Image (cartoon, rainbow, N blue to C red; front, side, top):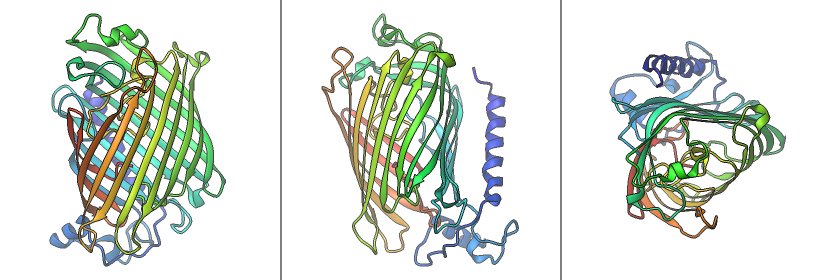
Amino acid sequence: MIERKAVGKLILCLVWLQVNCAYAQVASKNKPDTTRRDLVEIVAKFAHIKTPEQKKKNKYTSKKHPMYISFIPVSTEERGGSNVFVSSINSAFYLGNSDSTYLSRTNLEPSTNFSNQFGIGYGFNLWTANNNWNIPGDFKITTQNQYTYGLGSNSKESDKYRLSLNYIRCYINANQRLVNDFFYGGGINYDRYYSLSQQNPPTTPSSFEKYKIGTDNNSYSLGITANLLLDTRKNSINPAEGLYAILSLRTNPSFIGNTNEWTSIYADARRYISLNQHKRRLLAFWTFYWGTYGNVPYLNLPSTSNEPTTRSGRGYFVSRFRGRKMLYAEAEYRFDLVKDGLFGGVLFCNAQSLTQPDTQQFAYINPSVGFGARIKFNKNSNTNLTIDFGFGRNSFDFYVGLGEFF
């Protein structure tokens, strides 16, 4: 069991890091858009607080807007299993001249259900000056209950049962600029699942036990990654246009301590098309292939919302479908409802398919549709408060968070 005091100290340390790093960053030189409104501006006006752009000088730097911070006390970043209450802190900043450097971001997400589930997640996507390096990372420590339904895309609600587990995740990569918007690099992916147990499986032995790989009390994987990246998005929190594509190979060899040797290939592509130069009318497309090979531990198999960005499958619980290979596609229409951009909305649809355990073929497709509301939280980082409702096949889920899903 993860010690609650240790998790509490880690949360405080990461909050301290999040806030203090704000004053060490080089600021954006972009002038604020006075025609747009956000919640920060409205609350500041109501409370008679000066916003950063109203101040001529900052205590820590002579430049304006060192960091843009967004915060909500409750979100649904952890889905599936028992209800989990999660706060979300999003920060955005530039590590170089904003004319030649993409916007960097961090996310801090402590979570608990005030009973038997708690944890902390910290992610970032950093761009050094002139985009010479891209450094993404994801760290997570949780104790949780998670539903599992067995393998394949044809599982039923009656197949559902819980897995109790503790999880430590540490992913970090460094990608160096090759030419223009192309990058190459690599990193380390570490996953550890421990204190694994089942709760009331519908069959004996269960689908988890039948799989036999990574189903003991502990499951550990240390992977080495190699990446090829193309990214033309200036702001990954809420892209206005551009293209993102990544090909990532992960290998988990025995010579670095892995009990089970396996590899994975993850290929992800996203396209953002602006339909109007003066209003927010945007089409966003996302597709990925995730394949695994070898002795892959059960909890490392491709599954809903467990890809590297953990954002797929709105309308279904985390891990609703699981298999050795996964295909995914999503489209979304994003639009403003008012001229000043304070309120907006989205319409989306997605589909996922995972291979069947007996044939390893993509035999079934699970679609989902939904809609959502957007409230501009911080116009400087273009961060939205998001409220989404997804409807899948015999499934429904809702989401509250910061930043677009992709």
